[in-house]
Length: 237
Image (cartoon, rainbow, N blue to C red; front, side):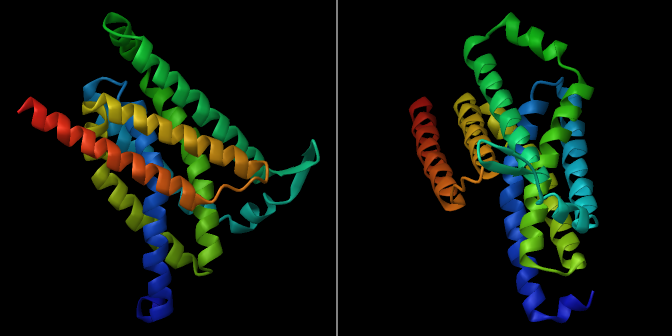
């Protein structure tokens, strides 16, 4: 813990914590949407389990840095594009995010009334946790690779992960309640996940989309929706 008194490592810790929180927002949104289809009594527990799994998975990957680095070695070549183990995980994760997001949008827009209630009854707790675990792996991989690229001290990485997960735990329920309360926000959140899915696929195929563009598009969309919600709230009053 000597890094606590080292200004350079402290700056790295706070920077990495901030980045971990930013990366964790997408994870929270996905978990909130998935757990929103469970019975009310199971939703909070599923969110805690999902975020807890993300923390242990990230810490596990930190202690497996040598294995993680081997994932960058090319495994196969498809259409002149070399794919490593990391690329395959990002590709499959991106495709999974696209599939789930489009399916959830379809269910939200096309299904209503009894059909929606029936779907809530049919989805199982184990199924939700399994899907959260799959996406946790994708986001954790991205998170740990970011951490490894910034600092070399494992204790700094773990401390940043623990703090960011604590923030995620505290913010998960308010974010989930807000998303479930506003249908338009839920659709917007799903659109964000489609955007993230596309960026993951692009990353896997060696087509890098600058994250600044993605964050700007999301921030602009959130600002517009916040104005819409405020206008709607005033109209109701």
